[in-house]
Length: 219
Length: 418
Image 1 (cartoon, rainbow over the protein chains, first blue to last red):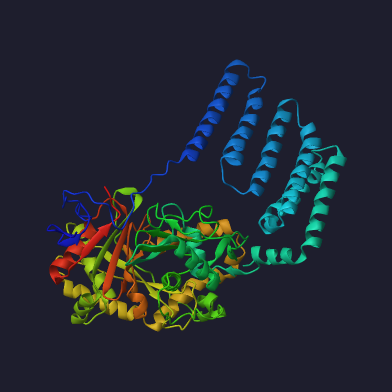
Image 2: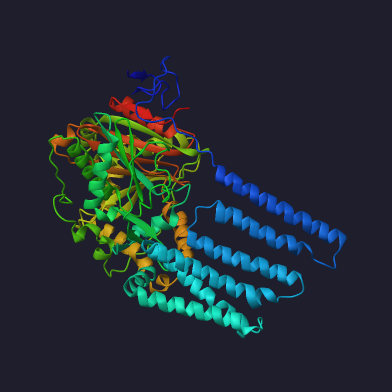
């Protein structure tokens, strides 16, 4: 039924005039044109904020205690590394809807950074960049390769991440060349594996690969 | 699965500036005479996406520009649950850059502006309604000036017409004055108010003033903004309304992608200014600004920044920042509001008889917190305002003025349930 709002000089079927909010009818009828909206509770965001807060709490508290008690040894680094990693693990890997490829890459980077911090805290970089980081990169490249091989349809989606992994694969060699790392074979093996992945990508997917590069780099 | 499209010039812009408070999502809806049947609508949607493949796309990231790729997933119709023109989350739509929604008698389609403009979107909605009615077993015909549904997709439908019509002519340098900006208490909802009236009567009134519906409505709007916001102050800024112009008429094109320009029309209103004077001034400006030469300039302007060699090879994130800055300080600053007129939808009588009226909702943005859209089918003209501020003062005065001064019978309805 139409009501007339003398205030706004318009007609409406709604109980309240949409323009001036005046009550036009006693009867509350359902809106013929629009639903009552569900308010989306953004749980995910809250969980992420909570994790962030806990992380900040843990780091700042341990930093303060560290500074107040013993300034010779920075043991709070042992807290910092794992907490930052845990933050990424929960907020990105578990709670975010990001692409699996990007989750893998972020994991590699975060794990590398954490292990590097732990390594540095316990007496200078050594085992982390000598052995662990190269193998981590290889493992992640392998993982992405397996995902792509299992779902060939998704090949195109992962191509950017694959390329990033291949580039990361040459990082250990650069660390070696800049004499940060002193053990050659893990870095070299990683580089070879990255190279093989790259060649594989080119050989087995020439057309899609070329097409994809054209698209991604069009200007 | 190899089909891909570059974003057109306007599409690149919308891609850069869209965010939570600027969704770049607009809606065209058809309110049917009977309750919508979702299963039939789904069948119709499958048909449309097959016939108009340039809408079945998802956004992919590139190094210098993002691009659109054919999307082979299924797009599902969904019941209306959110506020109109909410940002499109690709996870919700299987990567598609549009959503098809139904509520009681209404079929709405919301488009991310990078894919198409109002004209292209209207073709999509018309085709959707056509297939829908066909699946219902109705005996109907279809007609369109732009596309031939019976035929294979034509190359022209996915053309980037900005590139096709750009000329070498040096764009003239002129600085656009800034406009009064509407402010208000921000709310995190999009409130829409529709006003439904007789298209013929409005047309007659505009004719009496010797002008078009667009110019007449724009003038009333400027008067409403003045009355509610600028009357009691010393400094009278210009009140400018941005009006999108379909470029397919002056520059023949069959594209379903973006091909429009925007002209800003407005003036400083004084206490003594009469509505007749505003109407006269607005009509004059509108006539001048939609001259082909002026529109050619705007095409050249748009394409220029994109094709500058230096700009081409800058990585995308940096480019996006630059584009956002340009948008905020040049495009949004020079208007108080956008009012888009989709016009009278040409439909065969057999289809028209199933449609009660149509609606066009243009998303509001932070700096342009009320935006308007109008569309007519048959004798039903619907003017819609979407806002993200609490205050409805301008909208109220606008409708009140129309009904009081011109004796128009206006039915208003809204999603405002407060």
